[in-house]
Amino acid sequence: MASDTYYIPQNIGLLSGAIEDLGSMVTTITEQPLELDSISFTPSEEEIPIISKNFLEKLAFNVKRYISSFGNDYAKAENVDTKTIKVWAATGRDQAQILENMINDTFEEKYSVNVELSLVGSGTNLKEATIAGKGPDVSLMIDQKTPIDLAVRGALVNLSDYDFSELKCETESSAWKPFEFNGGVYAVPESQVFNVMFYRTDVFESLNLQPPTTWGEFYKTLEILQRNNLEVGIQEVDSGNAGVSAGIATFNMFLFQNDGDYFNDNFSKTRFDEAVAYKAFADWVNLYKKYKLSRDFNFFNRFRNGEMPLAISGYSSYFQLKGAAPEINGLWSFAEVPGTVKDDGTIDRSQSSTVTGSVILKAAESRGVIDEAVEFVKWWTSSQSQLRYGSELEASLGITARYTPANKTALSNLGWMKEEKTVLLSALKNSKNTNEIPGSYMISRSLTNAMRSVLDDTYTARRALIVYNYDMNSEIARKRNEFGLK
Image (cartoon, rainbow, N blue to C red; front, side, top):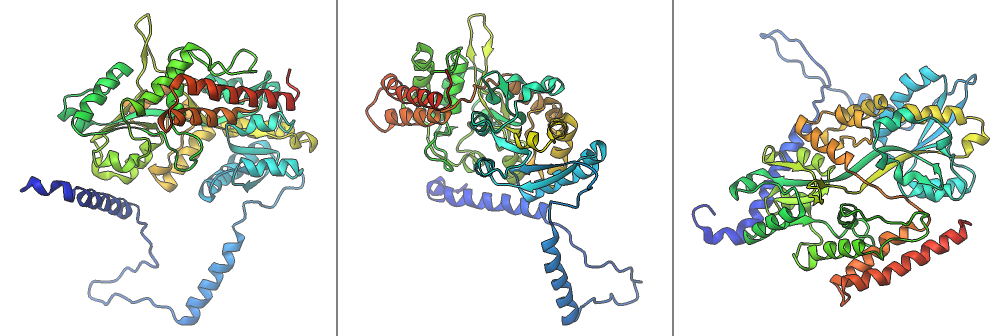
């Protein structure tokens, strides 16, 4: 390919695949564990002993290993003299084992409370168990849409009655917003993920470009990259949930940076009938209609091979790039998302984020362990626990499992480089979330339908938002009527 450029187009895919294979091999070799059956100190003049087991010894070992696999139960023997709280965690076994160890050697010893930890898959299981009267006292790592859905049904404890002032000082107010409803707070934030702008420093240097700081600069950079047959990535299609656009966070950026918002003061209807909402929606649509950005792509592969040297994605993409693309280490970086220039000359970089939280169910009150449940949630969401959990998670599973805490103190001490930490803390400060309300699910669906009716049909941006805004408000009104909200 280097000696004859004629062969580049037909071989570029092969070259890209070979680079990916080599990168994967380097990662696999680096993470390969060293396993030793025995260590022998042998004089140099003697033969190295050969260790071998006979069939019966091997059989006995494997039978013991098989039997012991049934004993890895996260529920343990309880101290009958102390209270017990039931805790569910929507996570994996490795994460749960770390949490279990933390509970055993820190929380239970300090507070003299037994904790029965169980692994549960999702918020759906929590809803079903709560309705059946078999739910836990505390549930961890719940997605941001679930708490209000349970709260309006009277299943959660209102946490505004308890003092979480220390934690509120260590988190941004945006992390609490999705959990606030009708004057109450129904979850405590744990993790928080937002977007950053990834860029290939080698490509930018070769084209004499700087990462854009405003949307005006972004469009100029986009033009230069496209003239050089390169792509810019802002995902629209969510392969895991095709019915809801992955680009709603982009719409939120355009909306929040121009002082727009989702709801009116009493959350009875949307504010998508305002001029700022029409403009934000049109700007979002034009990324794909006017500027021809790809709606569905593999960010990891295109970024690592240089086809897409600029992309806006969740900052958790950093972990995959750092852990699985060693061949481009030092050739990329990330910055805050582009912002909108305000009248006073400042740049507004507001954007939405996604949070998870811990909830306390009414079962804790009925079982008389509400105070213990509150202390557990305070302990778990504290900076010390969040930092320890994140550190042990990364030590156990590698950088690809780095934690994304909402707690600023924990985030600052998780091994980020100084420049990276500065970007993340600034982006966290600029995050601006909206409240979750009964019927919120219809907003994301309708925004997706409106957006795709412009790209795939004949609707104009303004007409599409007007049409689908009616669906949103109708569903909000129906849910408010269902739950008796004035």
